[in-house]
Length: 437
Image (tube, rainbow, N blue to C red; front, side, top):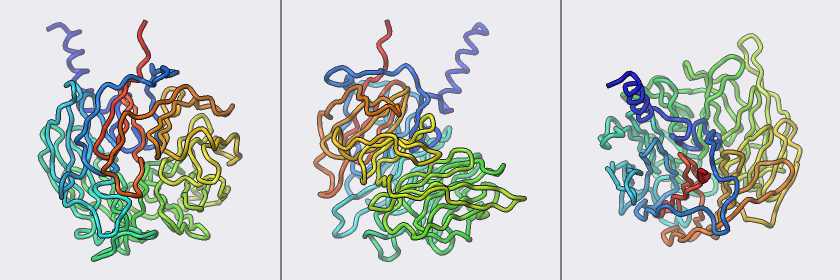
């Protein structure tokens, strides 16, 4: 074998165990911000939308999105009375299920007309995968064959609690609408949000599941938002939106570095991930709540928070917000789809009529907007100049397994030239690559 062939084989091996630029290894993508660095995608869709490559019909119930590394896709779903994490081989046509590992019992409770099954997206880290069930069962499995390495239960092992504002399961411990944050891998640590009086956040040894530290100074119940990594004031930390506001927790030892106490506190479910740029943090909540933009400073090792802006002009429920070239894009229940300046909060444009509420993901200069009702997907230029639509289509099928009040809340995923849309048991894959001339 020549040196050239050896290097090529090594590159292929490394790509199989390490996330590449076009992969989608966790919730909201490589950096948990809904932004893909992938290029070479269609700038405009054909009249009937991009080509449907395949539709998988056995994903089960739940609101987990897919995690994708190369030709492997990982997803969680409720099948029968249990929740599973499973792997699909994308090189097969149609995709072939390689294995399924049980997470735990199906999350549901009497009177729930909104959701059942798992909510969290799996997180991939080399040969290991981490998946969280609706009831708080966290499993670490091998990506090769689904063998379970270890498991922990948030309520049982960590006295965890989920904020039950708005309803949800409360016996024997508050679980609200089920655990929904997605696990975060940082070095040797797996960051979890058990929530409750014994501490909001915990770091586990990612290989063994043993507790490394727990932040006991932040006692909020777990929200539905996921933590993100940030470097603020020269200190690596995890930023988390909670009902009381926003917190920053040291990656090294779990010390509470700072806490922004919102006045009044968010009095409904906190779902969207915070967005961090430099030393500024943006957080938003729907249901009439609004958003907060704060600035963090480190003065001799003491962190301080300062409110830059608090307004109800952005009220994002479940679809997330993306930051592109200094502008925020997403949907607000108070004004429809929007473009805002990140630094000032100034509204650049709003659009109420083109498409209803939904989720958003960014890739290659375009916003992928998926409506929560009607199965409509829109391609939109990410521009402060206004709403400039570049195509739309209607999904070929919609789930009939959703709860009566459940809608399409899974965010679009773009990986390796493909667009993935999940609606409960249906996972649809579309070709969004530019045609090579």
